[in-house]
Length: 361
Ligand SMILES: NC(=O)c1ccc[n+]([C@@H]2O[C@H](COP(=O)([O-])OP(=O)(O)OC[C@H]3O[C@@H](n4cnc5c(N)ncnc54)[C@H](O)[C@@H]3O)[C@@H](O)[C@H]2O)c1
Image (cartoon, rainbow, N blue to C red; front, side, top):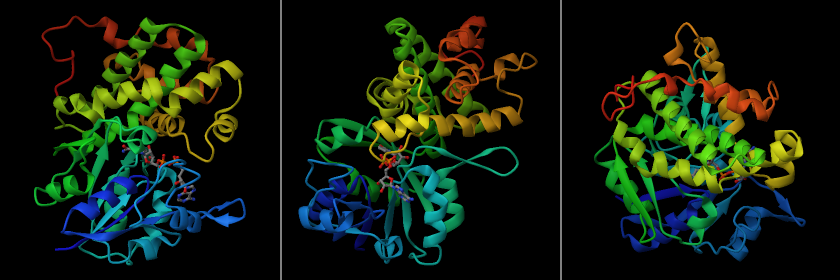
């Protein structure tokens, strides 16, 4: 079966793979949210210069990647839909696509974040896409800072896919000699890792902004990782601890806490005293910051479940995620972060074997 693929930021990889594999249609259409750059449409610039001059300047896209400003047109007849938009836009995108895509299409989501669910919880973005478009959705997450991937620097990524028939197809469209894929079936845990690491990165940025040093940074990254594991254990039971050792787990956490935009803006947040919104405008050239939004979404759920900093249920609370959220919203000062995590449940445990204390993963 010929595969037609619609992609976005990962279009360079998918475009080159489409040229290599006989079972994939050559043309890869890429939905691009239209913007005017120096008086000209971004889609026209991309299709003439084969370069996304705004979001991926200096990188040539293969000529078979075609930018399309209409998402319905871009997704029409596609067998595989690759979703890569900031997570706040996904519902609108899905409602535009509803009834306009192939019912047999399959999805691959690279979107890192959650959605606030009715009743005080959160939804995974892949579940939102499945619910709205009624298609199966796999996920791709990993230590994949986009500019380094575009420069073809070696890295790994994790695809979470339950469907054994689809998994090799997804690997074929994504894997290159510099972008190595591991496929696991622990889909929800892969996606949750991708979303939560942005919260941890904000805390790492605060530590950098406060000039607290490498030991403190390592400590907050570790506490963040332990809260990620606990979060998955509590809210996505049945997940595997091994998933945290894939690229979507510790590797993405490391790269995000050292190189990512959440860390960078959070450092500036401490040093300049400006708001997240101001810094987003000043520093990100139209890109969005996911960490503070994800922290707010997670906090919304933790608050509803009395799991922010409960002394009644001490071991189930998420002091680090809560502190990051309160700093982002200026409820507390960045310098108060360490006080918030000094009495972390992690420090009250006596280890009994290799598996983290209460975690049953
Ligand atoms: N899985 C991975 O390896 C990986 C790597 C990088 C990014 N991501 C994730 O992909 C998602 C997108 O990240 P990004 O860096 O490409 O984008 P971004 O956060 O930098 O935002 C800019 C993009 O948003 C688009 N946009 C702006 N307004 C829009 C609207 N109203 N509707 C639709 N699109 C709009 C712009 O066209 C542009 O492509 C995020 O969730 C990010 O975390 C995943």
